[in-house]
Image 1 (cartoon, rainbow, N blue to C red):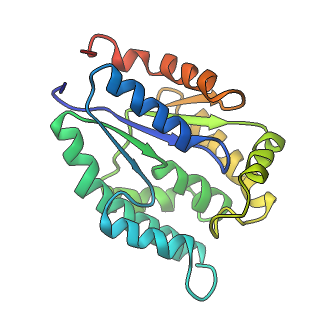
Image 2: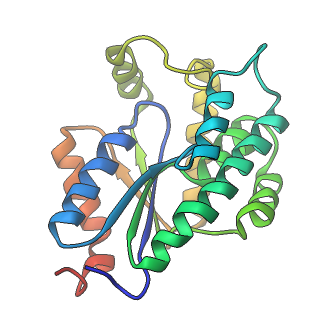
Length: 214
């Protein structure tokens, strides 16, 4: 089915929060309701953005500076928004994205020390300040998330492998961003069975799906 304009849902949270799992469960649930759904991720989602993703997560010759990292994320996002997200929404599709600009605000702006204004300025220039209709912020206590990462096994990329103090700063930044925008964010307890977390998310977006399902 199609609506005049689709909806844009972004999943945010730290490493091990379960964003990818919950994004997939939400996409399946929305399709079962009759919605056309596009699943995507950041950085990535388009050929150009996926190429930048590889540079970001596997930096050649050592880590990027926070400034270079922020610029690369913004470039990937600009292509993603122009080539995938806006066209999908214009078709009436729902877009479910694993991370969006608030990850840059938390990681590079907060933990990386660049500040929120710098990240938002890049986003205003590169992606015209685009915002999701709803941001699902999946949260969990540090010990539980660390256990999930340990169960997952080897560190998968350069950003995940940063020290605990960095990821603690990311979590704090996410909390501050969400607190400042209560109408745009829904914090969700991500600890527990995936099906239980999914039910919390469906409740959190019920107002967006009401009256639109086939």
